[in-house]
Image (cartoon, rainbow, N blue to C red; front, side, top):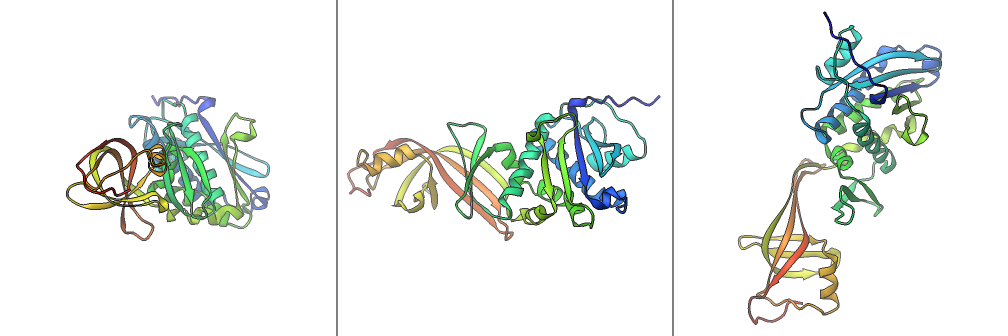
Length: 308
């Protein structure tokens, strides 16, 4: 006997397609399938990146169509993968064990809003916020800064999420589809609504100008300064084997140097927390970014003249 699907209202997301073509029925609902699968894939990718790896996968359940719109409810279930689950549901196959979707919904909608608002501008820098754990400050190529959740930034950098998000809004290229809405099914709070309109489509076609992150780790290590430039807080350091450029995030350390409270000699070394990020840049090339998150100690090394 087939198991019943257990649907919890709190775990459902409503995806609504609006426009004249939907209102008058001139748009075949099957033409919305590509966007539907893309939307399901964004939630599946978010589940994989932000949630427990044992968390169930996604299925989409089409529940109704209303005047002037076509809507789809998406619920997390513990059976097949996202694309197969869409097909399974449409063919009447059932699944079990719905789980809470609200946290993942929050990450996905925040990522969509960030993509929409940055409108093709590139992310040129990011840094973790020690005083605001779980968040990251992101700088765009016009020097605009935003603070977003670290998990949202993880989504934006994911090649899988970028691809799925682009697919999810392709329905907006069809005549007669003007808007896609994403919101909790039972919410009447306008703050929960993400609205992607036809004029926003280009922002989603340009999201793959983001670097794809490969490695992001922070290690404690000893380095020595080769030279220093206060322009952009970028220093030349050496780890005993190779020289490299690194940004400095430790503002207290920089302030002590600029005020003359700390002098650094040519033989001195630093004990630091060094963050190393490796990315595939938008041009397809490997890029490594090193940042001194904190200077833990200055190790005095002799009497050679001061560097600064």
